[in-house]
Image 1 (cartoon, rainbow, N blue to C red):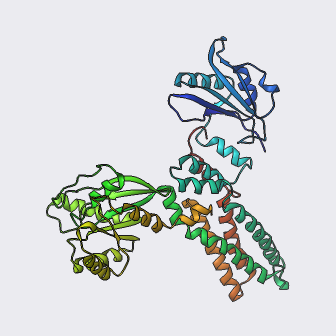
Image 2: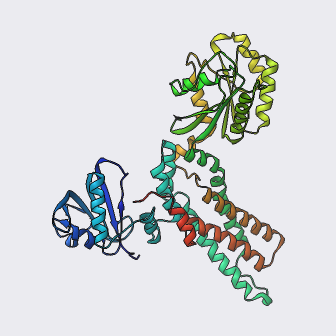
Image 3: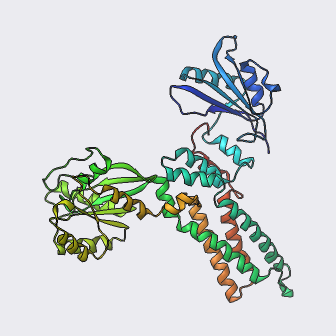
Length: 458
C-alpha cells in the first residue's frame, strides 16, 4: 500500500442540492483538510470519526459550516488517508472549498482516479473496479444485481485461484525445457489436463451469460415489427401507458422509428416502434421500411405483431418464415383477440405451429401476459435472482474467450503429445488473458482507458 499526491473532487452529483460531499485522498490529505477547517484538530482524530466545524478563507472569513469525516489509511476506499467534507450544495460553496483545497496542496482529481488508486492499492481487482462504475450507472434491478455481484468478487476470485494453480503447472512445464535433452516430465499431464478442464467448466457458463449480461447492462433492444395497421403503435402506447406514437387507420402512418424504455421484472427494454413492412408507396415510406429492417438486424429481440382478425393463414405462414430466417430471437404476438372467434384463433395457432401471445392492444388486454413472455424470453431470471455472476463487460468477454481458446489448444496439444515448448506457449497465452482480466497484468494505457470512463469524484 502506498500513498500518492493528494487529490480532491466533488464526490456527489454536480448541481444545486441540499448537501454536497467533497473527497480528498492521498499523502497529507488530513493535514490539508485541517488547514482549511476550524473545529477539532483533525490530525489527532481517529479513523471513521465525524467532526462539525467551518471551512474558512485565508482571511478567516467563513465559507460554510461543514461536517468532516476522517478515514485513516488503510481503512478507507482508496487505502490512503481520506477526508470527506459534507457542505451545503451551493455551486459557489463547492468551488470555494475546492479552491481552498488546491491552495493548500491538493490537485483536482481526474475521472475515476479515486477508484484507480483503490485498485492500485489492492482494495479490489480490475473486474471489481469496473463494477463500481457499473453500479453507479445501474438503472434497473437486474443491472444493479449484476454490478453488485461483480463488486463482491463475482467470478474473478475463483479465476484468480485457478490462475495461480495454472501458474504452478506452467512453472513445471518451463522447468522441463531446461532439461530438454533428458526427457523428464515435472508437470503431471493428467493433473494438468484436469485443471484446464476445471477452468473451462468455470469459463463456459460465464461466456454463455454474456448476451444476457449485455442486455442487463445496456437494455434489451426490442423492435416491434409487422404489417401496416397491425397495431404496432397502439401496442407501444399501451405498454408505455402514454400516447407516444400517432395511431391512425391510415396504413403507413408510422414513417420513422419511435423509441422509449420500459422496465419489466427489473429488466430495461428499449422498445422501438417501426414502419409497417410492405411494398413502399413513396420514397419517404421506403426510407422508413429500410430503417425498420436495420432495426431488426440490430435488435436483441423482435416482437412480430400481426392482426388476428385480418391475417390470412397464408400471410401468417409467410411472415413467420421471414422472421425465422432473420435468425433473431422473436415473440409471435397476435393482436385484436377481442375481434376473433375461438375457431379463428385455433386455426392461426395451427398454422403458426408455435406459441402465440394473444392480446388486444386497443383494450389493453393481456398485456401482463406479453410482459411476462418478454421477461422470460430474455432468460435472466435465474442469474439475476440467484446472484450468479453474469458477464456484462465486452473486455471481460474478450479475455475469457481468449483464455478458453488457449486452453482448448493446450488440451488438443496434450492429446497429440506436443513438446513442452508448444504446450507452455498456449498456457502462457491463457495466463496472460486471465491476468489482464483481473488486473494482475496491466498497462498504463489499459488503466487510462478503463478509469477515464468513470465520473470525476469516483
